[in-house]
Length: 278
Picture 1 (cartoon, rainbow, N blue to C red):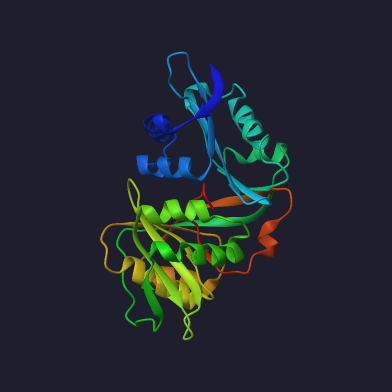
Picture 2 (picture 1 turned 90 degrees about the horizontal axis):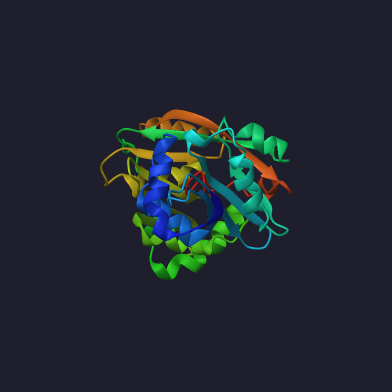
């Protein structure tokens, strides 16, 4: 087998690989990964891709690591470490963030990552709109808004994610911006259709109240179950999620290699784009 770059022509293989470990990646998810970062994987002589890992560089100071998968039939051969070492070789001076699985956490700890936070995954089988409407200046997002969205996102995430945000907007089923009374952008949210759930994120807002109002606008008119991954422990936001019909599904540690960029965030990131993309 060879460890090599994996491209969009392999998207069906990556979707199947994700199924092998119980993940629900769609082809659209994988296409978004390729637009936002670089992926490597082990390929058999037959052409089958039996592992993957992706690095998403967000400017010169930060990147995220994600989509780290090894086909269970090939576990125990050191492929996971090879994958991570390969993508980290191109990180430069960037700090690296990742959301770890329980199985992967020991490997990352051995490689110098340390736990610095927690992600809570929520699922709502049906979204329940709030009884009280949020009085906010919300409007549909346009492509012309993306640069302004990216500037706001940089303050919340601490990295330049403009290419990822463009890719996310292009596949959004709903996307909104929040402005104050003077017309200044102070929040935004996007929602995409995954293979199983609608996925709400990213969501950036000044407080839990505005974040809940953005979710109401994003999700209130659609149908089907919803997934949301939140890095915040804001009790008010979690209460809103309960009222909307979300239930906690799982918890995953945020890990960092290098400077702890989470300490510099402004508290406005209420939902991730995904656990891979951040």
